[in-house]
Amino acid sequence: LRGLLADPDRESTRFEVDLIAADGTVRRCEDHIALLPAPDGGFVGSAGVLRDVTERHERERRLARERDRVRLLFDRTPIPVVRFRLNNNVPGVEETNPAFDLTFGAVTEQGAPVDDVHVPEDERESAAQINQRFRDGDPVEAKVTRETTDGRREFLVYAATSEADAMSRGT
Image (cartoon, rainbow, N blue to C red; front, side, top):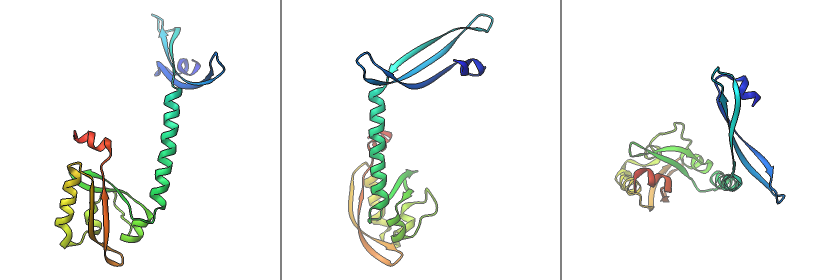
């Protein structure tokens, strides 16, 4: 409360705290506190809501651990991987792993069209078809030829949209 009272621009705050329940278990709780102003602008009291967020906190921890495992896999796999986002219906580079950088050369510009990085001119139509399948929300598995730092090589391309991407497209 002291922090709220000391800051005239703040009327409420939220924080989390561990509390011990009647059965002895520790529960993570979220506390929302709001000041109750007096008619003259002074302090009359406060109102608060205490909510048990233990399950949410555990889900967030599990999600963070899973995200760390995926990050480790992305960074350490010897397979070139690019994470991209559709920008005006064109796949733009969001991130590449070290194997991608070694194979195709480092991508310096975030958002650069993926196809500009490594698709040979005579493979552009095939790349456009793959991009269309991806935009349609279809998972993609295709054998392709790409330009690498060592010349042309064949690769298997796997592309899939996340559930969040599909929802944003309304599919």
